[in-house]
Amino acid sequence: MTPRPATHAPATRTRAPAARRRDERFPDVPEGTAPEPAGSSLRALREAAEACKRCDLWRPATQTVFGRGSPKARIFVVGEQPGDSEDIAGEPFVGPAGQLFDRALDELGIDRKTMYVTNAVKHFKFEPRGKRRIHKQPDPAEQKACHLWLERELKAVKADVIVCLGAIAAKAIFGSKFALMKQHGQWQSLPDGRRAFATVHPSWVLRQRGDADRRAAYRTFRDDLALLSEMNDDG
Image (cartoon, rainbow, N blue to C red; front, top):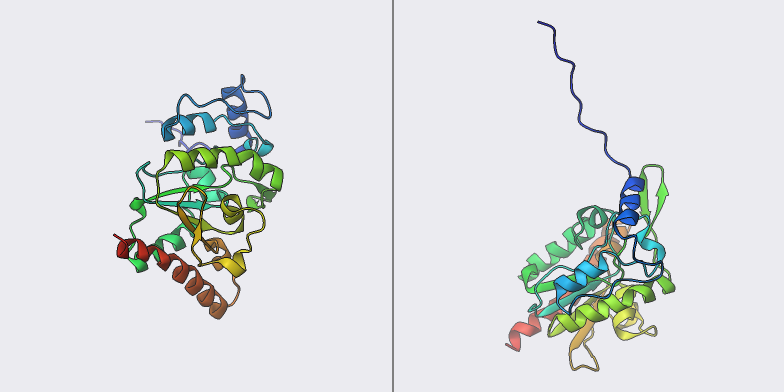
């Protein structure tokens, strides 16, 4: 009996075809614009954001990474932008920074399911280096282009508290003059009556080089998040 030729798993697709598929999927969306949502629900917002072309970050990104969680969540968490893992998975905070965030929440006895988690910027900005994609900070124009989605999420989710992870997130909520390293871990009152505070981004903790510095940075991060325990004290 003649042996059958071996079959091989298909090669992993590169990012470029994914970007072309996005272009083909939303041909009627003009550059520099986004579709108007069919409603104010998170589902309607997510579907519209999938086709957002308000800045150029949609081109190389695999997909839009919109927020996840219930519109009834008591805690609204804002990060900075998706990373490599989030860009592939399509969900926020699933990579190394997200795992550190989950660790801190577990140590504090806080269930992430009580949160709505999103980012100030919905597409992954990166610089290719060989086979790797290195994170790049979104510029002010890109942050501004994405701010309308964050505003709509804030209206759709009736959270009591807003938590900002990192400087980009903090400035998106508090304004450009907010100084993260001076004002982190302090309650702030927002014009709509909600309370908010900022802390360092978990990726900043991971970037600390020495073990001692990394432990100190993690303590800062976790101690700031411990402010959320006051919600239980308040009922």
